Length: 373
Image 1 (cartoon, rainbow, N blue to C red):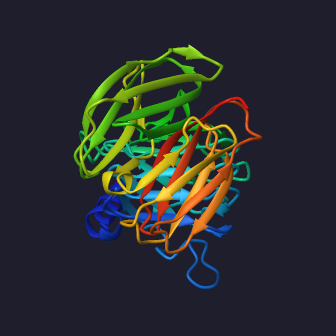
Image 2: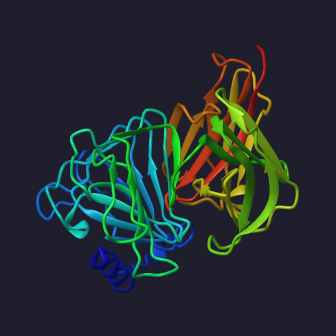
């Protein structure tokens, strides 16, 4: 086991990966699994988008398993920094039995417990290790401090063993065969706060931030954080949590003094024991704001979206409900000066979200009120 941590530290030092094209959100880049298959594919069909497979040591990266995609984990991946693993609706990671006696050649994802590495399983998503009976296969929280020669790790999803202890002090494993979403995970295991929705939307000159928890157990509070560069974060509000709940709970906060230019928002969720995890990052860009008009708002039969002459790239317009379900989507080429109408006459009265996504990946979200006909 000492070799396990020596190798992990070596990989961390030698394989740091920086992708400046994605510096607006995660300095290490964004990697998206867009089709089902093996996590690691030396040859043949690759499941990842054009950015390729996440590095074996993933530092400050965003890893996305797309909706409905099933990934078979056949690699060892070390998540550190502010890396965020996102399993979207009905996606799945399957952890097969590697038959390996070495952690570095097993099928596992290792969350660095000294970092803010975290993740989230959306509705219907799962990590499945039911066919797994290998000691080092699964999801682990690993901690190299305070003494790197003393191993300390916890398996929070994996098929076997249910309990394991060897001569190395402070080494222990507990496990579950299946982890099912929605649920949040962090670098110390599962977090008893199920965050199913987090949004930052524009409302006049303010930014309305909302989130929904599907269930809470021993939750303590939320810290809403804002950044001007996606790297340095400031807590702008602390909101008490419900504590215990088995039904959806809605939260909101209005940032009445948003920053000019690009602004980043994320949510830090704490339980009573001090453990925490991060949401994904929402990005608002004022240059895009100034070129977009939405009217009428409130809307009854339709809502118009006008894209200003300063918006020259292709755009995607997406209307969703407050839970993120896509109701309409339109792709606009040569968007400058374009006005698009979206019919809303068949929608129930309430709040909807209009997302405007640019070709460079930046996305803006607006609140649309639909009234009664």
